[in-house]
Length: 109
Image 1 (cartoon, helix red, strand yellow):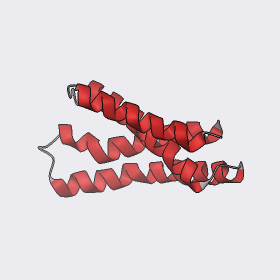
Image 2 (cartoon, one colour; image 1 turned 90 degrees about the vertical axis):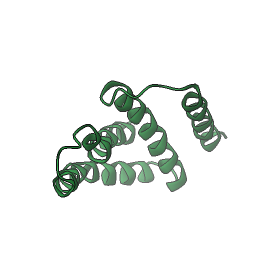
Image 3 (cartoon, helix red, strand yellow; image 1 turned 180 degrees about the vertical axis):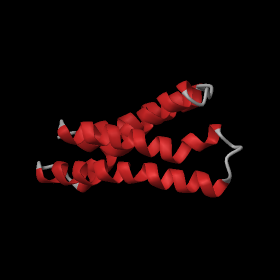
């Protein structure tokens, strides 16, 4: 559970760092890059321990990556809808379902 919580917060920072500047296009690109790097530092401070704890607890690197991508997608969808006010399209929903299927198959025994 610790791994999941750390990955969740890591991905929140990552999404803000990577996509938060899209709403503020009047900011010079170099400033957006510098700010994104500053925010991404906190992502790494959470991502590295999350992967370490998950690996030590028995998750494979493949499973960790798939969990991370699933969390990234959930966080990004919320961010895109609530912050960027992007519309949800049926093809995005179907893509999301396919990716969640990948998570299922990665952990299937």
